[in-house]
Length: 411
Image (tube, rainbow, N blue to C red; front, side):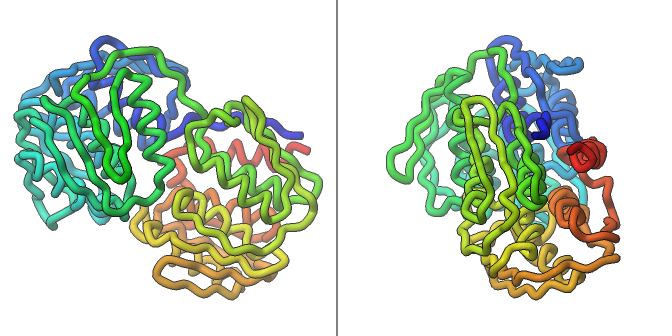
């Protein structure tokens, strides 16, 4: 059995950085993810005037409940969707003028439902180019609060940003959601908000957030369940292999750990304990039809091992993967076809037929870290697989190739 220590969760680290910045006092984050996305978030906080001190294994953030310390700031969000969506929302609770921009990749990703909601709360926010996309200027004068309606069918991050804003408003927020994707990520948000002292409750499709503010604390970051999916899939794919990931067990916050339930349905042996999860190969993988709306970040992982199943794999209800770092549905289909696999796609689904992927093939990554890490698993049983941009894994796991290679070479 191989034990793999997975880096901290990107989703948890980003939320913790927001909450720490908004809290009264100094927060220490233990084992935060160190990657392009999280470093960009921390640098954005520093640009806004928050004191951030980073040392190995721990980041310390001095909270500012009244908002950014800087009256004006230019913030570059890199490729980070959490940075690009959370930081303008945090800044809106303060007082000043803040300009946000991002990479070309992030500029293409939608922001409209969030900025429309913020405007509905009275935030003076202006897009510098295409409406509903970066760049944008926030002329902040605090947020009174109130009630709003939100469509979070493209991204749960819109709802998360507004939920985290709620305790910083003068009167609190009532958010009624008309559509919601990746709901387990919202559950992460609610649990973390409460751990920082917020009062939030859900009544049907409405979330009610009290204007409590936040309290600083020491907070440990759990391993990234989305990243763990590549190692779980690799173990399930290779006869005789198993892998254990410490820190992800029955009490894990992240919904993406449910990917192991998909592997179990395909025939893998899965054990979820209190403090760790283990996946063992049984030598075969079965085809299946699965809805991945709530764990869509692991859709490429499943697509990458689907050809090795004994039957058809159909993945449904993943339309939101078309507006990630790239159109992941099309990217998976494109690369599987390059490998000689029969694939069909629709607006929110993909069907992958069993077959033997054949190289040599250069995977078109589209600058997407999850495409690289997913097809690295395919490469375990497909000689000759290379990547046109292997380095884009720096977004969430800069050391991925070394760690994955070590895993592959360890009996």
